[in-house]
Image 1 (cartoon, rainbow, N blue to C red):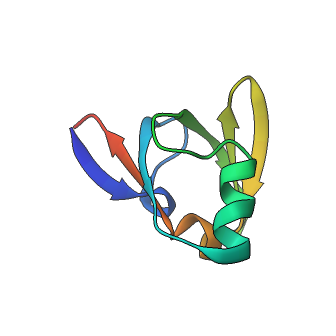
Image 2 (cartoon, one colour; image 1 turned 90 degrees about the horizontal axis):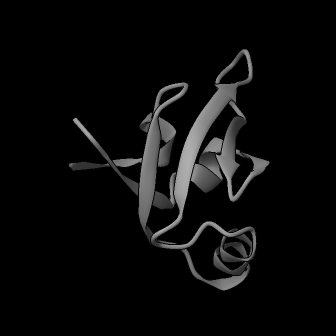
Image 3 (cartoon, helix red, strand yellow; image 1 turned 120 degrees about the vertical axis):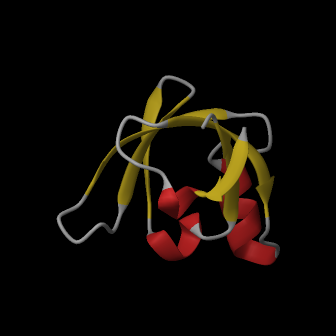
Length: 78
């Protein structure tokens, strides 16, 4: 498995969050949404200009801006 930034994931790609490299208010907000190490996510799609990104997590759908996704590292299979 290789680690990539969440922003680099492709549509329908699945991975497991390995780290969230943000602190303060943004870090807390990301973690409160369930984006914590060990959580499995799947990219559902992207807006026409690739921002925001929609992802499946814990049976629900979330959208993140790319500047938020940049703080999240994900392990994906090759």
